Length: 496
Image (tube, rainbow, N blue to C red):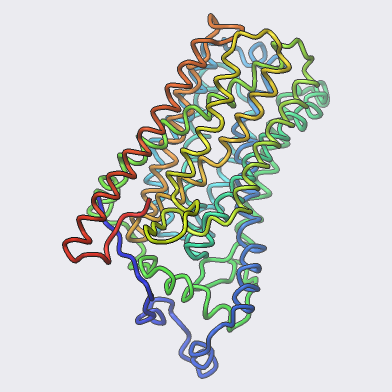
């Protein structure tokens, strides 16, 4: 497992060279000036308006294109395409598998091309595949489109998270991760409502409603891809878009990269490629944290969201009412993330044994939230036929598990010593998240209806496993940190 270096007062030596500061008289003068706290606050707010909305919009259309096939099933999709339920399940399995297989290569390409080009290409590519899904016929076409969609979507989430770490300081990153995931949840909350309207277009120009769904949402994604390429700034060192749009003053541009590297010198980029040695080091360092913590953490959350599909229908609500209930539940999910953003969690993993007790440890936060909604799981597990009560408790449980992804991602970035390692670590984090989604889809079985007693017991076990993994990781980090302190290496420590 790798170590990270902590800096009490990060030096600025070499930053001007890394940031490629202009050597003209004006830029040289600007580089020697300092931003006032008020000026830096305005700069961060400007980054929030330029960088975050475009990434959130990309995440929103990704979720729309990934999940709209579930809405298509209500419009005779099986009959029109000519596939069975089992064949459909196979297609749903190969999509996340394709994502897992190409996640790391995609982030290696990101490192070479940069986010403005690579993420824009990805959005345009999966938008094209999503649109062409409207014309699929037969099992072969169905499987090919699912595989291509997974390949094209792979890399977007870790690329976006990595990009955010290059624009923000450590104490700013966690909140931006949380805001970024609201883009995903907003799509989940509104996709059913959008589909409900589009599916009524069946018969227009001889197309089925599900075909119009793929066409309209796919074309929307293509438009977002073009928009992303046009407006997204290249990087903090060159904060202009590919189309030449400028968002920052000359003084602000000189400090975009400098302030981030001054906060954490490990973010200084050494090159435009990732070597095999760096790849092996990143995989070895983050493997246990990613697969153990995120899988146990994410699987139970995915189980809750999957169960959200069944509870409203088990209460005998019609499709429209079920859709509205699901929207309300996912809004609660988003609300909990908004709470996470507003709390003063300045730096996950900042361990201060002599300081005041604050919620700063990522592992402690995750375990605390797990303990809360584990109670909700236990209550739902009660053999009650009151569907309204079950749905209310499910909503509460989902709301408390909302922050598992941004917290995990923040924790991983804190333990990355270089941009290359951080890029690969975030790719592995997303791989584990997709793996959790695969596992969770098999927890609630048809023969366990209507109360899913076995499924809820499995979910409780997953929560318990997560808490044990987090506590074990924290204890190990504490022991290693004490060991390094006794050995006179107090400048090196783990983040937890």
